[in-house]
Image 1 (cartoon, rainbow, N blue to C red):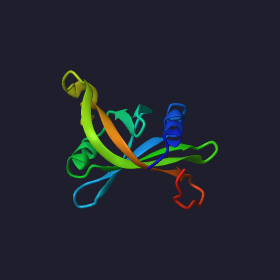
Image 2 (cartoon, rainbow, N blue to C red):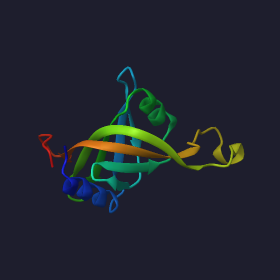
Image 3 (cartoon, one colour):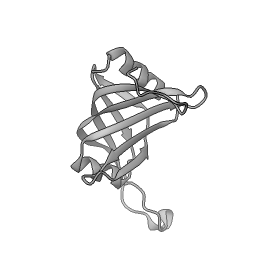
Image 4 (cartoon, helix red, strand yellow):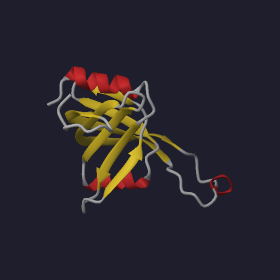
Length: 135
């Protein structure tokens, strides 16, 4: 299990930068990537990630609770990969209807979701070669 200090450092980094990404897979192991907002520390081994996730992310989590979250600072090529399981998905905001004159033919997420993630492991992350070692 990851240390609370490492989890806390990854949450703090996510609040200073814009590069937070999550990866999920469906039941057939087809991957999907999404951008996310800053993380929140919910408990010593639980974080919350909030965003207007696209339907693919939420659909994947219905069949496979595993998630990988990357928090990466490009300026110094350092960050963390958080591996865990989503134990709850909660709606935190909802758009008030579909506006075709504004949205056109693009499909936008209609619900802002909060993903409650039990952290299993925190690895160091960078674009430079790295060995997937615990942070």
